[in-house]
Image (cartoon, rainbow, N blue to C red; front, side, top):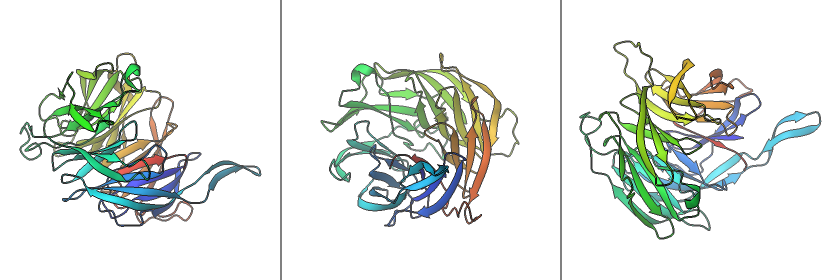
Length: 391
């Protein structure tokens, strides 16, 4: 399979990932046209179009057609190819639009594939645009939501609203055919997670009436990202400034949340001068392990998850070290591998995921390194990792 890598450079990169042994190879830039700071990206469900933010002061969003190359065989059994895939040859620009705010940092596609949502961190806005069904280009604006509330607990980071992610919440089975989808937006400056009803057919957006927002406590926590459990019973909010995870019970029938637990992502004992903040959160394929990254402590915290209550408990592994500033990581589709990007290390580490959820590092690829068999990692500051399967 392929791995698509976002960065603060001028291009998206890709590398071949061998799921048999956890190696990366043939790393290369794939965008034909310059895309400024493509720090986060998402693929359409048919893998034919990629959407990336341009995280800059002006703020932009780009639609890129995916052009696959010839099939590649990853390994053989005797004379028979047992695994093959088509790598990304090029990402060719379809169109670009302003994001409606400075520093767009997160992007997502609605479950029905009709609307693109983007969080603009510095701009304090959430951008929603239609997607053109024919070629996947970005169409007309649906809404531009301006957040205004800020807690001001941290004078430097919470002086204004700062939406940090856009995530579509799961809904109850009776509602899955509806054109109304629930968009969830963690806002670091507001210490809130906002909920919006987005009608992708009508092109309308309104605050979710059942619960317009969920308050993250204590104030000053700075909610950054949110991950829903696979059974849609719980959600996990990673708080950047509080270095915590807030566990919430989620009612998919009405789209509401209430807090259950808050746990620290850091060890109990730390050097007094160590500054650390969190970044990414993910749940293992079996739902029994939760991972959360720490930038500064440079680690991934590992938690055991009670699948009945949703509560988190210490994992025997506790923490695993990462390249410096692990801004983003991703689990492979089969749940057997975890790839973590070190923003300031210019490196990607590969971990094998054991049955108990523990992580074992099996390789690390640094910018400029070339071992011949694996190839050169050329991505500056890798900050988004996206597994691509089935081109």
